[in-house]
Image (cartoon, rainbow, N blue to C red; front, side, top):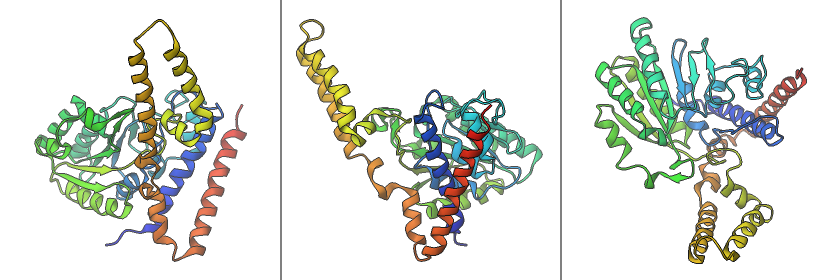
Length: 341
């Protein structure tokens, strides 16, 4: 069976446009605090969620928006939650990181690694109450260094819990590259706990859909958990306003803010030694240069772009879909903002 690329593209495009609209509201100051988007993860989420059925559960990390949308949660209460309104999905108390929908058996948390215990709990309930149902845990590669996630995988293996563990690996832990904070091979680490591991290109929705389908079919047949290791990128960095990306996108605006401060520091008579100050300047410039070469800037790593190429043989259908999706998102924004008390 082949994936329905039109359906998958629709799921991904809706998520991307919704998150871009969310970013606009954040930049306008209507959403407070940090904002963690899942732009770049859409193929991973769509490839998995498209296989889920009623009774299946999701344990999500602090980038839960895409999975919530693709699972069918209404976008208006979701967005109003981000804005902190009382009629938001969680009464305006959860923001974008702590989202819950009992109807959809979905919960997200800003606590790194907590998706493991939550998914194990969902899976144990499914094993006892809903034969054939599964739980999915979505988390980043940084969560792989959290003990509670490892303990959850171990428990899932011992009890053969119906859990799909999905690692969305972008190679970064906030501003730290994974190779400088994570030892060994993640797949081998998981296999050591008795959980089969599969590597996938998380930017290719077809491959993601096929791998997730095989894994979920196996899990539904009571063969225990599986770990999907999907590589991806986060186009906005860890959060909106990630400074190295801001510098690359608008160097004339952003660089003076850093250069002036660093120059003043270097010219001061007191404080650290000059060589230490110059070393700090080199570190900043190295980070900026690294960002210029960063895979986040490569359009080939954008799952939306890659999927769209496969659909260009039907340009009229493609344009109609995209136009309608943009109209739908604009209507959502108008509804949300028009109902402000």
